[in-house]
Amino acid sequence: MAWIKTINFKDADEKLFDYMQRMRGTLPPEYAMPAPKASKSGESIVESHTLIPDAMFHAFMTMNILMQDDLPLSRRQHEMIATIVSDKNDCHY
Image (cartoon, rainbow, N blue to C red; front, side, top):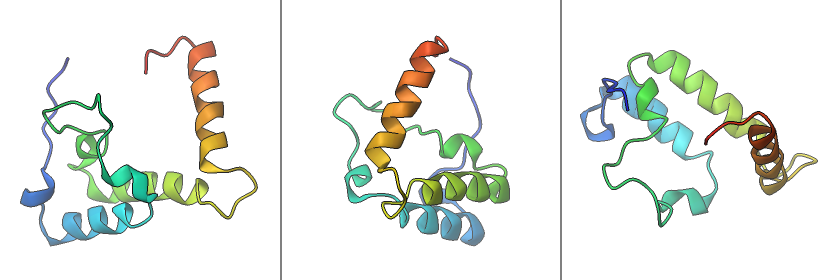
């Protein structure tokens, strides 16, 4: 696994901290707890984008807004579609 410099939530400057807080506020409550098999080191796909806060914020907020519950497809349906597409494309994640 490649090492990527990241900025931890507790070490974020005011702008990055604000972005991370706002992004967390758009996620469903079940995302607050790590999955049982989640990495113990705490790394995340979000943290891998912390060196470019504006890009991180806009990319992840776009995704979060596109997955809101008041849209025609539920988040569960979106994630099932993404899983099938990833499998068909031989993605490992």
